[in-house]
Amino acid sequence: MRFGVSRDLFFFFCLLFPPSLHPSSALKSRHVEKLTFDRGKSAKPCGTSTADIARNQDGDVPYGTIITTCTVPNTVALTFDDGPYIYTSDMLDLLDRYDTRVTFFITGNNLGKQRIDNPAEPWAGLIQRMHSTGHQIGSHTWTHLDLSAVSAERRTQEMVYNEMALRNVLGGLVPKYMRPPMGSCTRDSGCLDAIADLGYHVINWDIDPKDYLNDSPALIQNSEVLFDAGWDGVDPHLVLSHDTHNQTVHVLAEYMLKKVSAAGFKVVPVGDGSTSAYCDGGCQSDYGSCNAWNGETIVSENGFCGASTHQTCLGSSFGDCCSTYGHCGNTDAYCATGCQPDWGSCN
View 1 (cartoon, rainbow, N blue to C red):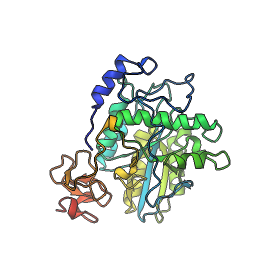
View 2 (cartoon, rainbow, N blue to C red; view 1 turned 90 degrees about the horizontal axis):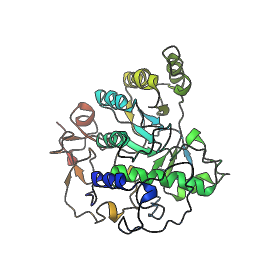
View 3 (cartoon, one colour; view 1 turned 45 degrees about the horizontal axis):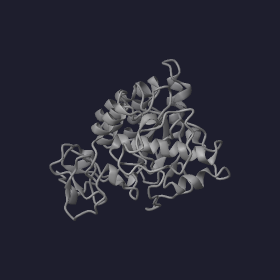
View 4 (cartoon, rainbow, N blue to C red; view 1 turned 135 degrees about the horizontal axis):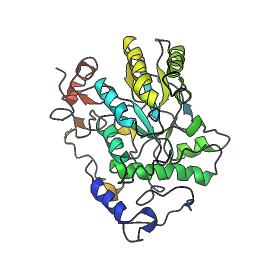
């Protein structure tokens, strides 16, 4: 995808005109939002609302239900909630060393860190680094409220504000996967159906090492024990953790990576690792090109590859091999078993 408005230009505009000061004509095709969003608790992201973008329910992954485990044999999905935060850069360094991709469920304005699309803060750069190195980015709402307990309008605000901010940071991409805060999204409250209507898959977990209760050198071993208790070395699993905790990033994460690798399993993102993890039907012409694919193979500029993206790794700065999960790289994880020869080299 080629973007018509650069992120740098968009962030410069945000600095000149904070969200509360945007003139009505400041952005092309700005429209009146259908939702009367609450403006009391949290600042609004820059730009037009995403409330009216197309919401597709495509693919084989179910909507309107809570997904708690992986289905692909010999895989474990590691997920990190609530970030980005002051430890996230170290988390990304660790994942780079292990040549591993995970899912980050991003919260847009929590823990006193200000908006993730605020150009004066470091968060946008960290999210862009996640995306450029092949990690999946999901939504964890705007301010981390219980989606089963708030009003329907506030629930929609929590989702739309976060996707607006992520769109600003990622040049137009909107996630298709989300994790509800506290894992709370009940059918009786209307949450499950509402999130499905927004085109999101709801992801929880089947292993919780409770790292949020053990963030000290004296306690983090408790989380290792809980991970071991949930990890059987046989079935695929989906693990909850948080890149907002020092001990998770600097102790627990590597412990889990080593454990999974020693069992011959592969750590994967929750989604399929391609752009289908992002909104296919909500292309916004203000933020990029919405032209149909012209049939030409594209050299990957974002680390993704394969038939779903029409991108090859040959000539890519990420590496020439296209892995079975649709990522470019140069190690055996990309070039050996499962390598896709139609979309790169398998040497």
